[in-house]
Image (cartoon, rainbow, N blue to C red; front, side, top):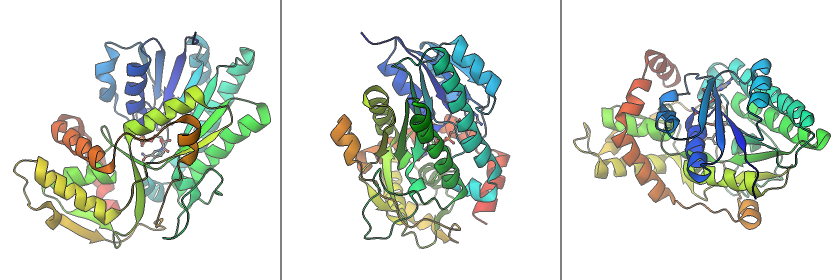
Length: 355
Ligand code: NAD
């Protein structure tokens, strides 16, 4: 029989974290779920409201850098599993202000790792304990057009303050396995998209601007290439890793959907033309505006997900076409979720980035 688990999900009020909370509560209704989230600009407690009535869920507002709080939670709830999502996650914001990225991503991850190590030691190193560190493919740096995709053995070469801070936290998670034998796992995933994605990110930004009839800012020449994965496919991958992988392993996760930014924006415009009623500007492609490129903008990311598919049997269920359609439909029917996020702070940020 499987051990009763209590899982601590950090950053569970953010985009991927909240989707993962939904995934976990739906898949393992017997497990207890503790969400720890500081509710920064990117965290939204309302996202979890529907679950708080039914699931065995406790929400704690707090910072992953707060060691006494973490110690207390680990003990009081006898946490067996950590899924660590909490992070500053937006590259453009890391260029404007890198401090919070080093603090949360490096110091915060270190604080969690060290607290979990003490908890694991105090419990006599139970075999079923796991610490999953959720990371990004951006730690590998940028690819040229004909380079092979990133594999788990590609060397790290982060280019932005965001990816450098994530790289630092990945190295710590790795070191905790190699030095202490602590059962850490690391995943490096490509760009996610789907429900509950904060409006500043490319896909929701385009959907919302199309609805509002605002220009669609595309960086540089629009030829930057990203791999895109539907967020629930990522959550299923993380579930496979937590439940099946050997401690100390690392897995790349990707959708096999390499697309140029401009092609993605065109796809979104066409979907919105088809699915939205009474758009202010039609066709939506007329709103596309090229803007000054992001400093240090990585040209291409691509993921080789062979390891997770052959070892753990994970493959994505959505194609880019089906996933984008679901996402556009979600933004069209959840204006009450995203409208309140277009705050004054958000508008000020927006002006700075696309000035
Ligand atoms: P997000 O910005 O939407 O959510 C981050 C959450 O962490 C927010 O709820 C925020 O309130 C919380 N948080 C921030 N600082 C905190 C702190 N100090 N203490 C406690 N909580 C804090 O980010 P996301 O897109 O959901 O990304 C989640 C994780 O997945 C990150 O670690 C990110 O690096 C990684 N990742 C993201 C993507 C992507 O495409 N979004 C891809 C690969 C990996």
